Length: 116
Image (cartoon, rainbow, N blue to C red; front, side):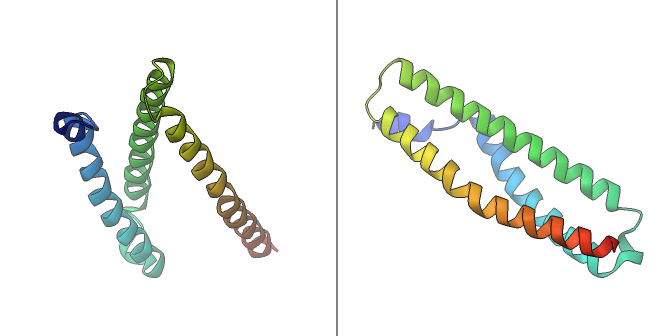
């Protein structure tokens, strides 16, 4: 990989957006945990916190779509290593399904018990 290719792994606006997203995610996560512990303090800010988290999810979805399109272009051009990258993406996606399903099941069970 050439040095110029290594620096341009992600366009500059997306790179800075990703850094901002990481910082905002950490701050929003802290505020959400604090809001659940002290509801009187953050009651009026809770919709704003949810909106910020929603915006972060949208940005990360755009980033993932951008990277998948880029991988698709590399596969069509038959670049070296693109098939291996596709295998890594598929394996990581499959590995994330089980923890996601477990968290979903526990959350549904918790909510069902809370209603009863």
